[in-house]
Amino acid sequence: MEEQFLLRKEPLLEFRFLKNGFQFTDASEDNTSSFFEYHNVSNLEARERSYNWWLTLFDFILGVFLEASGDSLQEDGRQIRFKYGTNTVILLLNNCDWKNIIKTRDVILSKL
Image 1 (spheres, rainbow, N blue to C red):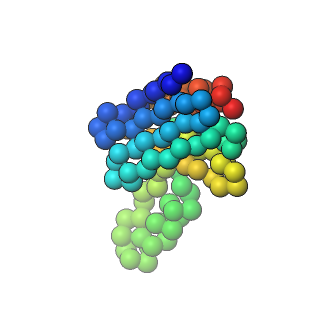
Image 2: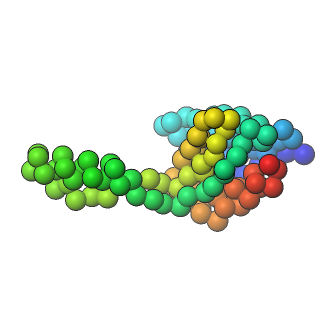
């Protein structure tokens, strides 16, 4: 039985849960579409927002030398992250409802 979660209509972002894996479709500028088999997925987590401290520090140092502001925090958006085999996969879920992201994560975890 196929189950589908629509996280965003424009541009389209959805997860389709199939018997052996899930299909991720993102029609934004990144235009990412991939199929992931459940048995290769591990260490799955959802992240709401975090700050990229290395990029923030670099921005600050660059701002000092260029006499620009350099006072902005560089933010990573909402995402689902997991290991797929030996690779780390980060699915960016910007402009998606946090509750739906958590439901999506829970469905994937239930199938692992």
